[in-house]
Picture 1 (cartoon, rainbow, N blue to C red):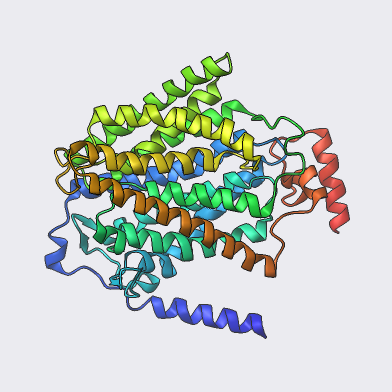
Picture 2 (tube, helix red, strand yellow):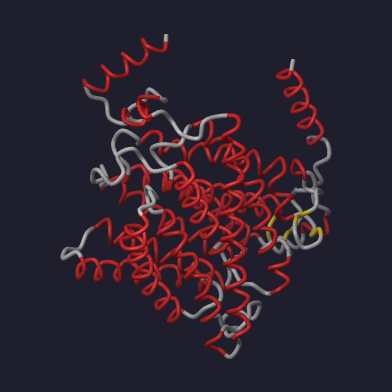
Length: 449
């Protein structure tokens, strides 16, 4: 009976959403620029491509061969679930009319009032879908901290609840006209909204769910560096849509963001390579690529607010900050952030948000503010408030969400399933078929039957 009621309510809600979509008025349509629209269509597609297959391959190459499929599933399923949540209620909570500085209004519920009308110089549809791609990949990043042990039902529930109660409020506060936006905190493409939220949430989830059973007992090196590099290169490519797309048009600011993205990534990769060579006595491809990602994370909030020279410094400094955060902080506290989601995205995002408060200048973007190095120390304070807010919201919110989910379903798989690997124990879908995997798969299928 309860199941029937749920389906009836869902069907009624969907039917309610259909008839009231508002199309653009003729006067509003005239404001749309075809060049800007074309670029934003491409940028949105690039960000989705950066998510799947980019992040999926990046994470999939880093885990053991027993958890490749399950890890990629986390990325793929987050794209599915978050897209639906975004259309039904996530977008309106993030970008609806401001309600007291804390949440968006409900005028876009079910994508009502989202149509061809212009938002700036692009159709509303494109703006909403571009923001959807951001929300989806932010959730997927979190999976890197808990790969190999979180249960699949828990992950689906977590994706729905996290984007609703953590991402949507923060996106509204920073980008949707909320209190941080009004205060003047700068976040061009997601330093606080995307990277700090996801990194801190990943760390919180890793601590609550607990370490892998074999954590600290064996070396958990990447099983396939080729897959990892393809994923890293796809992420780098996608980041041009991520950062340059956040200009919401095709103009000089887009070009600046594009240049800053490339320079910071290169500086981060080279910086990591040199540090690793000095500290660990040999340079590695995994290290260089990870450094490039750290540089990209660092420049994300600052991409449209700083000069190219500042971008180089931000990317270069991101490398040692993230390197030592992973190899010393993680080693000291022994938390099991499986794929270093906190080490790269959390720590790198914190640095990027702070760096924005240091290097921002209105000489490249009059819509921003000057930072400390350009005579405005107050901007650094605003950035620090944004960082602290993201940390508190992510840690407390993730803790509460996981505790609620645990009431209804286990957060992690059994020890037997974890040691077998989730590809076989849950999905019955090994990444690489071999005689051994086929035997295990057949025996598990018989057991289930």
